[in-house]
Length: 263
Image (cartoon, rainbow, N blue to C red):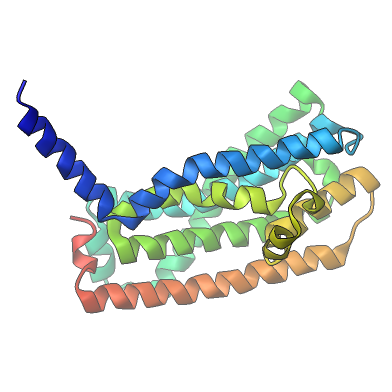
C-alpha cells in the first residue's frame, strides 16, 4: 500500500472542499438543520401536548402542504439541472430564447410536476388516515398559490446560484427547503421559537401560511388578511428572485463562465 498515493488522493478532495463554499455549507448544513427542526418539534410537544385537537390530521395536512412547496421548488430546479446533466445548458442560452421565456416555461411546467406528486398523496391520506386536506375549503387554493409562488422563487434563487457557482451549487438545490423548515413553523406555532427567530420568521410567507392552516383546522375560522399577507410576501420574493436571476445571468456572461457550466 502506497501511502503517498492515498495522501495525494485525500489532498485532492481536501482542496476541492476547501475551494468550494457550497460544499462546505452542505457539510455544515444537514446536522445543524436536524438539530433545529427536531429540537423545536420536541420542545413544542413537550410544552403543548394538548395544543392539537386532531394531531394526526393537522400534522399530515402540514406535511402535504410542505411537500407541495418542496415539489414546486425541486421541480423547477430539476428542469434546470437536467439541462446541465444532458449538456444542453449552453444550447439553451445560445438559442434565440429570452430569459423571461425560460422563466415562464419553467414556472408553468413545474406546476404539472408538482401536482403529479401532490394529488395522489392527498387522496391516499383520506382512506389510510381519515385526513383530507380538502377540508380547508376555498382557502386551500390561495394557500397553495402562495406556496407555489414561494417555491418557484426558491427555484429561481437556486438557479441563480448555479449560474454563479456552477454545478458545485447543486447540493444547495436539495437543501434549500430544509433550511427554511425550522423558521417556517410548519409543525408548530411561531411562539415556540425564540423571540429573535420569530422576527426573522415573520418576514417569510411560510409562517403566515401554516399558521392560517392551523387556525382553520383548529378554530374553524378563516383570516383572509393573513392569506393575503402570505401571497403578497411570496410575490415580493418572486420579484426579487427574478431580479437576482437576471443579475446572475449577466454576471456569468461577463465572466465567460456561462459556457462552461454544462461542460
